Image (cartoon, rainbow, N blue to C red; front, side):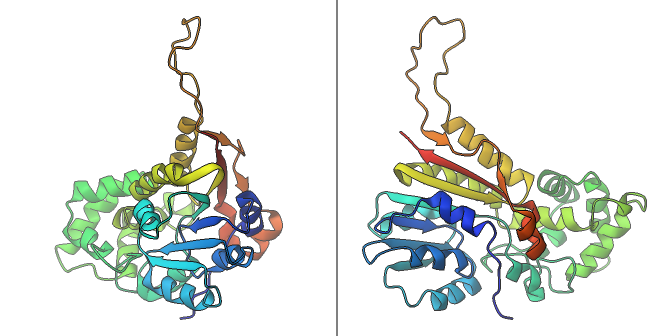
Length: 310
């Protein structure tokens, strides 16, 4: 299958980066290289772009797409390792960082990757194609562990019912495919509840994918490193696609932007705490109606931007 992915909020992202042609930039989620190509096109020979992605399929496409640029480094790794990646390239500080989170159109539409509840495929969901898979979670985790994953990462109120039925069905035979899991989820959720909120398997599939790829923990780890890697005046742009991601980004930026933390009864500040960043957009930037019409998946995208000031 051809790697195709429509980059969301691309013009807004490029504007927020405030690209210096001689600067150094990091695209933490390069995917097929759509945004990376636009950034590289705006750099001079003295500029530099570092592209990171953990998906081997994406890396191959990205390499081919950006082969005309001599000032681009393409690294197969998890963005949670951004500090080591950048430092191993003998770079200390950068002029801007972008994270476009979530799952790509290619990953969703490639049935064999096992991300989608719409296609029959082996249960997998690993972005890196390495480590534990959705199959391992569904077939070997306890009922309580599965329930916790589905509730924590999918905010699914029927998590206990789903987990219990998973364990009951797998006792008869292993659950090997996505549609086998979809059938179990559908059977576990009451009929009345299935009429609302989209596909009944959506939240459970999201939850297992997030867990398998350690997405939220990796995001939090990456964000802390990003702040340290930015030059003064450099911007961090993060695009999220669900509330759990957005909550982490919002809370991080809010914490970084805090100044004095002295108790209100203190007459003067004694902590000396100054804000590390300036939040550029208090409310997230979202896709325009025109973009949503062209790319329905952009409807849930939220972009937050901050500038390092300390």
